[in-house]
Image (cartoon, rainbow, N blue to C red):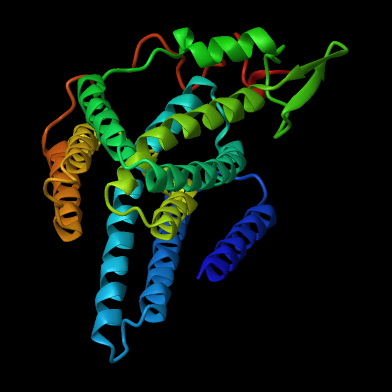
Amino acid sequence: MWSAFAAFVLVALLVDFFAMSKQGAHRVSTREAAIWSLVWVGVSFVFMGMLWWYLGGIGTDEAARTVANAKALEFITGYLIEKALAVDNIFVFLMLFTYFAVPAEFQKRVLMIGILGALVLRAVMILVGAWLISQFHWILYLFGAFLLFTGIKMWWAAGQEPDLDNNPALKWVRSRFKISPTYDGEKFFTMVNGVKMATPLFVVILLIGIVDLVFAVDSIPAIFAITTDPFIVLTSNVFAILGLRAMYFLLANMHERFHLLSYGLAIVLVFIGTKMLLIDIYKIPVAFSLAFTAVTLAVTMVLSLKIPPRNKGGGSGGHGAGAYPFGAKKPDEMA
């Protein structure tokens, strides 16, 4: 199954890359994003079906069927949790694209590179995490406490507009690179008056990599609360990330509608952290974890549609969707 998983992901990425290169730089429509989102969800469930069948889900061996059903349930639960946490990634990506006024036709390539980086990063962190848990059981308590803290912190931070101007990562990038005031197509570096400079697109790529690292630290402990099986942890994570690009374009125009979703994610993280801390006292069933996560997210999404956001105006401390943070004009405004 490890070989099948690697081949499955490789083919999926090649198809995605082929489709992207054939289409070229263009603005992704909501319809296209919805179709690709459905495709990635379908691919994930096809893989789960293959895993269930391989483990004996349709066989006559009752023990094998029990194992197959348990692993399939773990996969679905992990996939849903990682998919839900990925929504927070999407809103941060949207904030970065807005701040740097990244043209819509360039966003697709940036997201693809960011997702590839996230796949590699999470694979390494998951395998290291699985090894640590197998050697030191008490790390589960550390993960649980961390998730509990993260959930509480997310609850208090929900609804607040991050101040990118004072972001340490952005300050670090600005201190290390000379940054061009304008974009140069999809290039990461360009020449300005004979000086080689990084384009704003390169800065966005670096920041997305940092965001991937931060969110991996949050989400990976969450999946270990569902299962410590490295295969299920890795596959559910990877399949949740594979559809991230399409989901971004699907939700980019809806983030204000789901303004309460961060509260739901905070509740889910607190629940998962508590589940980890109680692991040696009482093991909360995976089916209950799946139901709790699904209901919590559904309720917060419905409430988001019924309760208007308190702040309908634009955020403060950042740049509007039409301004570059380096004081330059958009390409279409330049002679």
